[in-house]
Image (cartoon, rainbow, N blue to C red):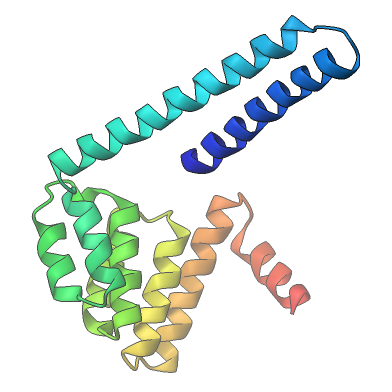
Length: 180
């Protein structure tokens, strides 16, 4: 995004400079404000370029965080490696986003039992987090849960949704029936 803004702003600066030149040559007029805009845009682009270079060098010097390493491992399908990185983070089990991402990553990797463990931990610690119940149901489905267990999980999920929407469970059931 920064590179794109750099080149767009550089293009605008060059265009304004060319417009100034055309104004001087063809209209016999001089608009210094356009030159000030061009110089400002050019300086801003150069500052952004150096900012990107500095941030990139700083990131390389400090290394990746365990969360970044875990995310990269999950994307590559290396669930075991991702779990090692996550376990090295003291705040891992107190963050619903990390727990959800681990559950989702394990579901995608086909490790439904371990995904169910993360999803259970997620819904236990964060009982109003709707996406945790969705992940739990997906993990249950993949691990071969019975229809009764899935029905009970669906009911619990609907209770959470109704509580979050400040509607009664009966109202939510009616809404779900009406929507198809």
